[in-house]
Length: 255
Ligand code: ZN
Ligand code: FE
Image 1 (tube, rainbow, N blue to C red):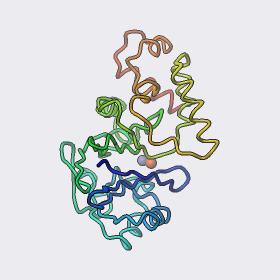
Image 2: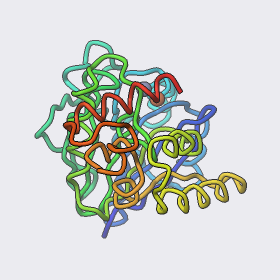
Image 3: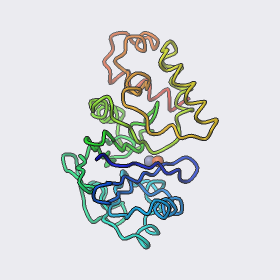
Image 4: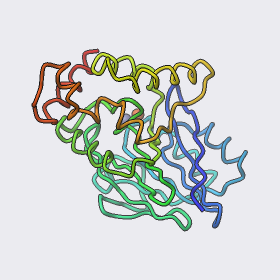
């Protein structure tokens, strides 16, 4: 049976996730922005926390960890590249390694760019990928530590996952990302109709995360640097996708 995945709003606009294996009862927390809402979700579901999977070292992804572990001791997994700046890890992983949650196996994907050492967790049997601040709904994380070509390469790895994968990203930035996306891809009818759905959800305080990879491929400008309409709109017909990506990311930084 696929993992049961619960989205937990934390802080102003972060998301944490609980991924629960109904067969074994094992449960993983993906990122720990803030303890209280996560502890409340564990109490409400009665799920037994066995694992914490950390995507990257930023405070808004780890700050709640200690208080959660005090009540729910669990095995903590994070990137070996970031072990020096993450909370104490029980398991250190890098691209190509696997993690298990109950009877499910997840693959580690290095998605450096936002930070160098940022990882994503892909659970193919559950069609789920936890991307935090790499690939986001209609956007991608700001490039703080890596380079824009590195971020582009990281997003290409995620773009190559099966289309029906759900993308569990770290923040509710979708409406703002969408406003920017329209400036890059104004004629994209799928984008325009997605923005209407996003506005409706946000008006009712419904998370727009997770999203489907197929919708990201169709509407997220950061996955569409190869698209002729976008290239023409940017005056970059025939440019290589990495250069187009750099231009889109630079425009977003100044948006
Ligand atoms: Zn971050
Ligand atoms: Fe973040």
